[in-house]
Length: 357
Image 1 (tube, rainbow, N blue to C red):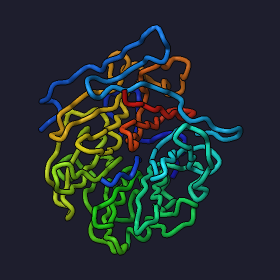
Image 2 (cartoon, rainbow, N blue to C red):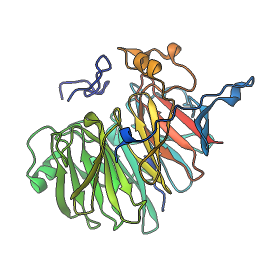
Image 3 (cartoon, one colour):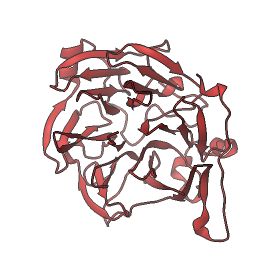
């Protein structure tokens, strides 16, 4: 890949449009609903910074999790996921490895993911027959989707050669972004920065089908950047952040397109807890949706701030960032208590913890 990994090649903050997780918990149009401005409160005490409204208010802790000496996020912190023990895993483009692990209080535990060194991107964690596994997708054309144990032992890898043989979709551009799971033990591999495909496998690692391809029609994608399982109505569906098309799309477990919902800015990923869907948006906000996919609140949303955040080079200007405002939320997930962890695509990385009030 001729382009350096030190920037997202699909992100152009000088334009209003852009060029061509989360915790594993056991568990129509956005434009048509009321948009509620986020509630930003500052009391005399510095700790009283709050975002949200009603039942969905959160205190804000930017810069959560302290790294030891010689450990850096590099150009970005990309993905975030949480295991059953409550440990938080953050992917990055720095060193060492491609994955940092913290305890619930933000104490650094270890570095992992040497196999994807400096190329960390999507991450999800799932328990299978009593054992938890990390699923990683590196942001690089020459690297593979990887399944590994929590100790870093590689179970399998799947890359362009194998996916091409199975799907018939390659040669062609290939660059992974994220992974999600089906309730029967299968999984979906998202080639979001590449051919805009999502490859589906069953629980026995058998290839089933490929969804999508580049375009703007229903069932097509322009950067399917993030994805997750949405079973809030009792029927499991794959929900996909079709980022550059500024929308979400839903599919059944056989890859059939069900519905499309627009009104987003640049949706990056999805998590679900109970009836609530969480959508980090690369355009400086985090959206919460209810069971009917109506907007509950946009955390950190502010039009004038967004204009500044999307200006050229702002992701590097840490001294100009403001408390209670996001720059580029790239991934976010709920913990077991309903708190939110957000990883941002900014130089030097940044993880924010939103603690539910």
